[in-house]
Length: 164
Image 1 (cartoon, rainbow, N blue to C red):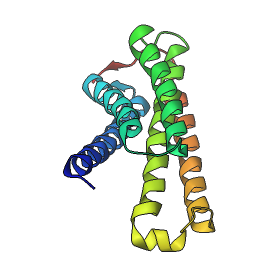
Image 2: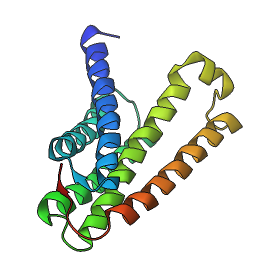
Image 3: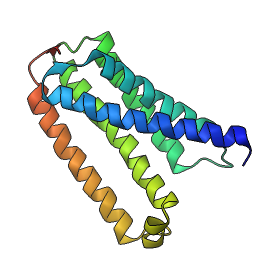
Image 4: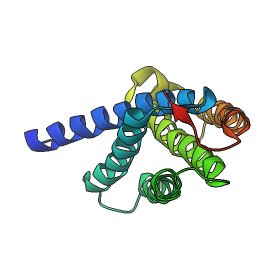
């Protein structure tokens, strides 16, 4: 792999991890009903950058990761509209909460896939990603994010967030 490609891949991974960490901070803020303006902008920006840079990685064909990237960009567009276009007024606060959690879930979903592809111990457990360890892990992650989304919507309901 040429140096510029490995450097780009490393940048993509760092951006992705920054998006995941900042996403958890943002979701914490939603549950605590605190407006974390910097973290929100950082999460949305790094999540968009993750999807965009993912499309720029070398590939000979359309992959499932490309489909996840498209869905993620659509979800992020809704989140940006709800947060900055509609200012979390009325039902837009719940729409934002759900879209933020879904965007974070998609980032974590890809993280799990990549972990099973790149970490030798995990790859040995699920070499084709159709084995029970992979499926169970993804099902548990999905379940946790469904619970997180429900909690976020319940806690965040009722209007715009207050400044932190």
